[in-house]
Structures are given as C-alpha cells and as structure tokens.
Image (cartoon, rainbow, N blue to C red; front, side, top):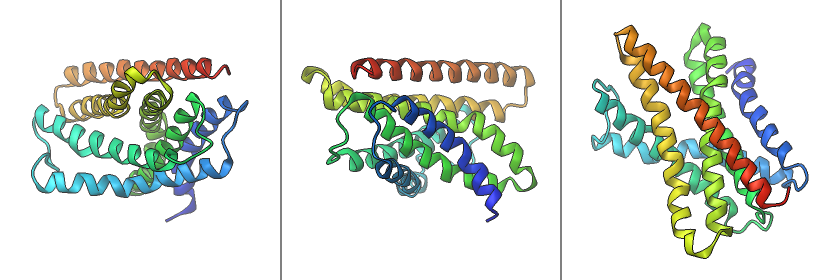
Length: 236
C-alpha cells in the first residue's frame, strides 16, 4: 500500500489525538500508554468483525439493505453495536489495572486514542478502495467520519470515568451509558447517512443530509461540554 494513503488515513486521527492530549497537558498520560491505546484501537477493528460477522451470518442484518428498516439494522448491528463493543472491551482491558487512570479526564483521553486507532484502520480500507478518488474520500472522512468516531469516544470515556469515579449510587447507570450513549450516537450517525445516500428523491435526500449535519454538530457540541465537565471535575 502506498505510503501517501497510509499518511492520509492517519493524519485526521493524529490531529484529534493531539487535540485531546493538549487539553490534558497539565497532567499528561505517559506517551507509551497513549501509543498502546492507539494500538488497541487498531486491534479493535478485528474484534468488531468477530462480533459483526456472526450477526450477519444469522441474518440480523443484511449486507444489501433496501428498506429504511434494513438500513437501521445495518447501522445498529453491523456498525454501532459491534464497533463500540470492541472499543469498550479494549478500553476496559487498557484501564482495568492502569495506575495512570486516576482522573476523570483520563477516561476521555484513552477512549479517544482507542477511537482514533479504530478510525485510522477503517480509513485505510476506505481510501484504498476509493482508487483514484482517494483524496476526495480522505477529505470527506477526515471531516465527517473521523470526527464522528471522536465524538463517540468522548461519550464513552466520559461515562466510563463516572462509572469508576462517580457517585456509588449512580455507577450502575453510568456503566449502561458507557455503552448505550456511543452506540445510539453511532447508530443515528450511520443510519441517517445510509438512508440519505439510498434515496432517489433529491428533496428527501437533501432534507436528511441537513438532519445529519444538525446531528453531527450537536454531537460535537455534546463532546465539548463533556470535555469541559471532566476538566472542571479534575480542577484543570
């Protein structure tokens, strides 16, 4: 695979990892742990396939969706559930005995590194399959898909930290939200895009594209609020 494709796939992920680690500059995590988290994220792509392929084989979702319901099942069980489950498994494996995980914001930092590792590997596949249109695919995914994975990771890391450091009486709820919040966000993200791309009616497709942009912007704003919350919780 050409080096330029790898670099194009990697750059958006590195930018967002740099962004989140810069916010953690007053109490940074060890570089080796961040690299390890990114590697775990790359590995999570294979783990997600182990989750999604059996679901496809048993007919939970179709590889050739036709109806809106078909697209929902693909978005939920072909993407959101297996991918976020794989990332969460990697996050748990990374943090369960990590002495450096001692602040609220750390959960977001590690989750983002894992999410960006996943996005990097996913990007390589999309850019390689785009052929001569790799640059267009790289720009589109760098502006939409990678920030999407970033937002899902912020949600996961936010609730994961609360599940570990939050009020004892609410930790059960936070454990549920650690998985449910990124799954729902991911499902909506993919579902709207899939349905919009499948419609022949240009007006409906345009309206769904507008809806997607609204969801995308709200996701990014929700991520910023949660980052600010945990920075405040840690007194940073």
